[in-house]
Image (cartoon, rainbow, N blue to C red; front, top):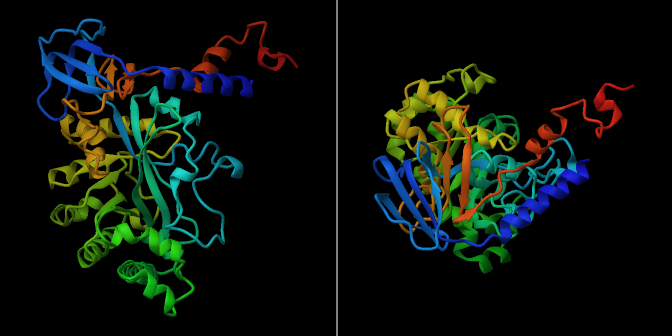
Length: 425
């Protein structure tokens, strides 16, 4: 059964990849451009994979595929800003989990998500069917503070679905960093500064650096990988939660002039003004309320709303298998005071801008990628579903393994099912 379903899923991905970008006219929908005001009875023209026109009372080009979106809501494709999509299939199976190295592996920053990314992972169509069109695929840290280089990918299932390789470097701090550095936060910050200093020295003169004695604790491949971080070309995504740890990170960002994105920030609201002043965007959960650890003591469902009110750019995350639930996080944040328009932006434009690709996708405007979702209701309502999903102007197959399993086993009286599934012994 598993083999059959995997084969069907792979075939669907191939068909999606084979579909050529065409001219599409989405007409009469309630369009949320995110880059501007909502357009009632709005139209979108997609040509050659990119958005050509957005407005009201447009005319469908001759020969275009016309979709009547009357009564529907149209948004940009959702962007999951922090996942391990394509790196992990089954979390507890070592062979099917490439997201993180085993204990004792010496490298960290040098690891690259592109090397292991599998565009035909069954998790991709599951999340695509929920309106996700792009994601950051990021490694998880092993024994070192650094996890490696993350990549922006599209969720089309095409072989060539890497949108941007080396999009960000990932590090873990807070107690996660402390546990890798002598079990103290002092150790974690000291080690992080050491890495940054060594990376600067290597970048300034690689030949001289390799000739002089240096600590064997620093692999040259790691230092080379950190070059774009210390030069400010590549953002450093840091997993951190506690308010005190965030303050230390702000000081480090200013000292080293880094581009920093925070993941977690369960106590971010306590330092919201400082984050806004430091221009640090934050990827948060909309579900954090009760503390799971000491550094989460001040968790609150109002975190996202308070960060936004202070001027912090926010986005949402929910792991990998359930990356699609980011819109539920956004909906919960709206219930706790986040404006609806800000929640839609946190699912689309904001993560694209955080990753330096706000000029490519995340909004509905001429010249942007044809990543468009047509919803049967408010995207922030859990009962709403996408009716159509486009990636780079290509209409996507919304079938997926979960849907096929549901269809196969929804009627347990079917005679073609294995005996065990029909109540047999």
